[in-house]
Image 1 (cartoon, rainbow, N blue to C red):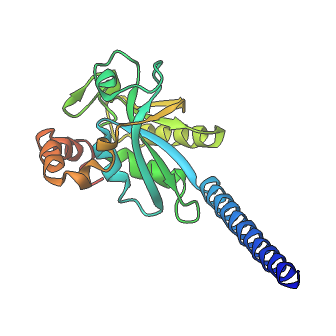
Image 2 (cartoon, rainbow, N blue to C red):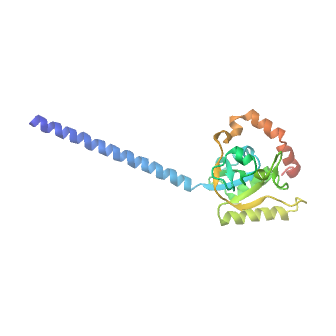
Image 3 (cartoon, rainbow, N blue to C red):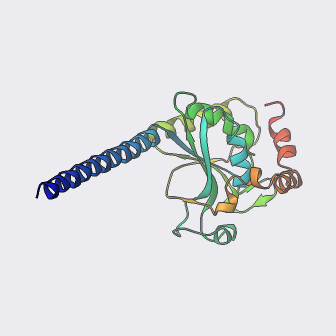
Length: 215
């Protein structure tokens, strides 16, 4: 009987230890999830369209304070559209890039400054060799402050007298953003030669030099 009692004590001790370990594990996982959500909530968000999202993504990845860039589709009526659907120009979507940034290192105004020289703001429904509504240039604001800053930035560019032609880049409220297929993400790093050929053959940098010169 004494042996049986000792065995019960041992089993209970083991079970208690396991319960404590499981509780600690759950607490740790919960804390990690909370930390992840907190970190995500503290990031800034911005969305820009500048023609082919491969190029817009590559341009913004160079900007200090940018944490991530995601190629995708915005402003259309179809849920979860495919690249084939969007590129047909029939869905109303626009190729765009959603940016997450560190507010301690950059802000929306600085991103606007970085954005303008990467696009042709003078051509409607086209960016470089890509034509159609799906390739127009646009700034999508996520709150009233971003709207105010985007409009002020565009107005300042108009007032500068730099261009004799009107600036046609649109400013719209951000709508549902659908992430593009995985092969589009970080395309310029996954397929550097193909990306370089596309950017060169599309004469993107040639046109940017014509529009912006030395910026």
